[in-house]
Length: 90
Image (cartoon, rainbow, N blue to C red; front, side, top):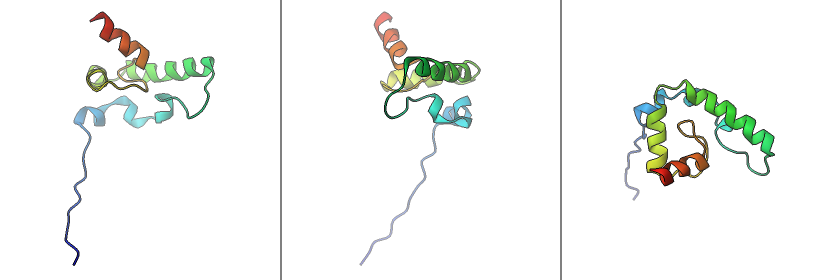
């Protein structure tokens, strides 16, 4: 006899719903699978950072990334290397 169960949808935090990147392709914020040339990476990161620059929840995003040790992608306008540098200088 099969039991019944309920599925509850998990909503992202409100700041994620308000984030400028929420309306953009994740491709700007994360590297592609496989190789990416340096000039391609820099161009992709510039696009992502320009989106983050105008985001009203940028600081919350960055806090989330630092608190959870996000190792990939642009979060709060910073790359993973830039976020690691923040931790060393703090």
